[in-house]
Amino acid sequence: MVRGPRVAQFEKEFTERFAGAGTSIAVGSGTDALHLAYILAGLKPGDQVIVPVFTCTATNIPFLYMGVIVRFADVDPETLNISVPHVRALMNEKTKAIVCVHYGGLPCDMDELHAIAKEYNIPVIEDAAHAPGATYKGKKIGEISQFTMYSFQAIKHITTGDGGMLTIQDHSLIPMAERIRWFGIDRSNKQKGTWENDITEVGYKYQMTDISAAMGLASLHEFDDILSHRQKLFEAYKIGLAGANGIKLIGAEAMDRTHAAWLCTALVEQNRSNFMLSLREKKIESSQVHYRNDRYSIFGGRRYDLPNMDAIEENYIVLPLHTKMTSDNVAYICEVIKRGW
Image 1: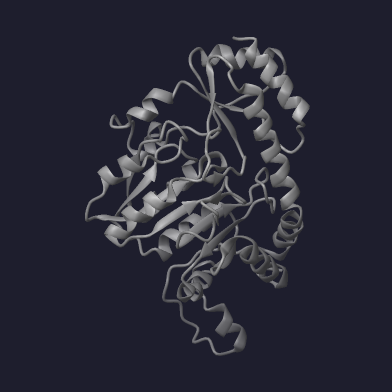
Image 2: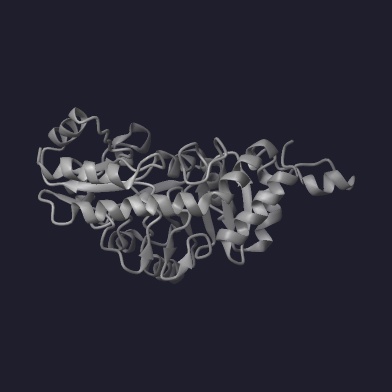
């Protein structure tokens, strides 16, 4: 059933867990949730948004459909999250939103981003595809900003096979959100027989089905165990790589925020290709996962005002971290790394 009782239950339980005083809107993918957030934020053709250059392309592709101008912000070299100083430098009167991604599950500098956004009276939109269960200064990711998106793609902390959720703090936007995710139809009034059979907003087929929501509910009920296990693996990497030569773990030193541990990313000082080959010889897979978005032609080509991204582009690597792993697996990987490459 499309948007049936299981969807409503999933939205309710997700809200109770992550959204604070907000409301959750279930959709067909995390990308759907982002596009919906951008529409609800009132973004129009010609508006400018500041976005991270280092993220999945899904964060930024909706803007190409909307005619919104993307302005890429550099990375913070300590976290690979969006650089607050560069965000501030990019701000102008045409900037209508700041989008941040909690890379790997490590929250961004939310106080600083909100301070900038407040000066310009614009929203912060959080891409929390990696970060369910993360916290920032005691607050849950999902209750801090006007809009927060989650992904339920197959290998995320919570999965519906594929799906997404958007948490919204302004309850007055919920009717519009519900219309847009179903072709612009006022479904509530239609079911009551009071709909005027008109559509006044461009909507999309962005709804979640009851089948997906049933999987989401089961996954949500397992979430504590999944999060705890991933965080234990990340801690094992912190211990195992402490003091190792030539490699630095990203997010290991964060003290005022809780890492959701979707990715374990490190910077290797040199010879990333050799590093990857040395791991592969021991049957250990590694990857970059995400790439700087300005390398893709659809975004207009490479930028040359992103020195931090330039500096780490050939050095970052994602190490194995998933629910089928054990702490012993991590210890073995760390020992292999410490032998050198």
